Amino acid sequence: MPSHTDIPPEILARAAKIRLVAFDVDGTLTDGRLLFTEDGREIKAFHVHDGLGIKLLRERAIEVAIISARISHAVELRAEQLGIDHVYQGKRDKLACLRDILDATGIKDDEACYVGDDLPDLAPMSVCGLAIAVANARPEVVHASHWQTRAKGGEGAAREVSELILAAQRA
Image (cartoon, rainbow, N blue to C red):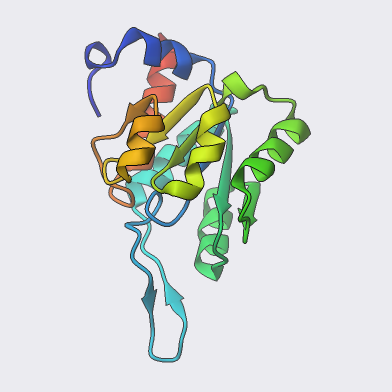
């Protein structure tokens, strides 16, 4: 995580307002690879540092959401372990899903952060107060983001996001 002085003041100001962080899964909370066993079961690897970052956000009363176009039992299990209440899988229209979450929680667009890596993430990123691309995101996503992590998806990027927001809110 870059030090406070490495982060532009505009990004810190955006992060200070955040009340909800929504994460894509494949390529953001994981490295983006899809692994299958011979009997067809899917396997995903989640980074423990990311998990603690998510727990720290929740301890500070910041809502956390997962919005994924795919459906995976592994995502369900990981979300349950981390106590994530907003878990939406099989959502092709991620913007509509994000809008539903914001409406249900009363959180405003500028109080939302979306973290993604690929084209389906562009629409929800476009309405958020803080749009973040992971280090290995597609160029279009990097271009549309306000900030980019140094860590790749599935390798600590979510922890970086958590630390950025928590540091901005302590300042």
